[in-house]
Length: 440
Image (cartoon, rainbow, N blue to C red; front, side):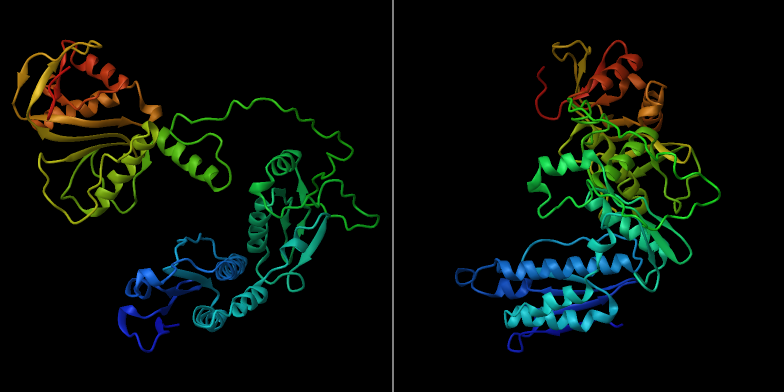
């Protein structure tokens, strides 16, 4: 399928016209209505940028049906789109591209949303039937068409959205399922109905009828070890898991945030994995703002660890455009261990320093305008802390600049962990950078 663009306004050629763009990807095609130039060219005093509620509802319904069908066909990825009226994308299986183009065209020009609803109905899947209570065998070619393993993965996703435990197993030509609802999920949804509009409990109290099909055993294992067991009881108590994790993520995240937290926490604790396309020959790499983009992207990934952990508003590394020289020779020191970045220090050369004895509340002492390497931020993966990793980074910075460790300057304010490190390296006090106010 070739990419193409369809103009919807013959009298407004070029960027002022509304357009539909069709672009093919591996698993699907995107059919996107581009209204950006059209809205910009229209007098803002005479227009309402908001989409009609019926338009938005039809688009959302068609988009959801399309995404379900694409995942059902085996696509493992995720989808992302905006919510504004200037760009309306649909992710469409290839056989339905022309129908999607026509549906968007009639919706935009004729305010006829029946095409979007028809597309949604055509692609709708019997998910409610697949997740109905009771054990049963879904046969490929009869109940579903995709490979059993792919179909089971799709069903698990849909079951999770409804809070249901699928208890499924794929065979060569079928999928066995037994959807059940845990008391925890039932309590969560009944306590917060505004979060789950339209949700109905179909599973609690369901009893298998006589003569229901029994799932055949696999490998001689006993599958009836819970037969006749007494259900687990639950009590409502205060949860100790609310709040922030030490890595900076929310401990009470649910849904997709669970995976994001797990991924981030592993990197915060063990270090950020080194991309395979980087040839890393030594234990420590010095990355500047003129280094290849792959290295600068790695620094940006590592910089997100202390940003999230300490809830900083801005990242300590933002040099992701074309290579350029920066004032003070901004550079990052990356320390590697076990193919992960476990230590990170970003520095630049600055003048205007003051002496500080590291005592709480003490004033700055001697002033100095010597050019010194200044530590803007230092971070170490959690499992490598209190092992001299931070000290190794500071010593490398001093050696690289050609000065003593005690001559290195620190950006203020210095965190408590940074002050402990500074005291170990320079017990008599440190230089701090004072670009504007050299007061206490």
